[in-house]
Amino acid sequence: MLPREAFGRVLRALREERALSQERLAELAGVHDTYVSLLERGRSSPTLETLFLLAHALDLAPSALLAIVEREVTALPPPRHR
Image (cartoon, rainbow, N blue to C red; front, side, top):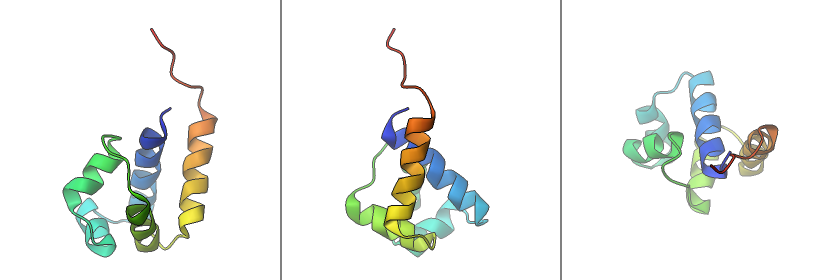
């Protein structure tokens, strides 16, 4: 799994665990809700600054957020090339 896809899955799961809408998470992080949607769908990768903003909005240390993403990336086999 690509890191941006793993980040999106983790972001969505954490947001839903906290019962936050994409709009509310975006507001808390100071980003646009469309950007949160792009991140969750793996269409975009966050900048380092955005990673910090999202982690703070989710009440996590940025390193903790990255650790969860890293586990997600390494938990699944890499995509096979056809």
